Length: 167
Image (cartoon, rainbow, N blue to C red; front, top):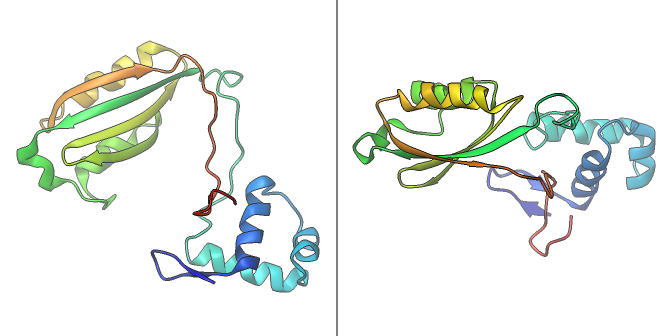
């Protein structure tokens, strides 16, 4: 068994279930249970435990952004006024954090240093990202931004990785 940062114990069966669900979130409880050597009811109980603990945050369909008309991806680095960095916590109720994540173009937001954030944004066209940048730069805590357009995506994946590099 392995202890996570939040005190959740994940044993080999939990990890195998997570691997299977990441590969196919629509897999049936019957197949999951047979694969891990448990009944469908026991498997469902384990999955619900992982959901309640926040290990499984949700289930989603992975879409091809170009085919859905959202083929423009940028990474935006935001440099924050060091005098105002105390405003930022991981609390999503914090107004300044909500500014970063409220816009539907923002796919990811990460704090990457003492006074720096990186956003991954996606839109149908560059003008939508430009409009977002105007709104972002109007915030008093933003000192400057650097935007980098993605020319192609080689890999986008959110699977669980073990310390040895395996799933």
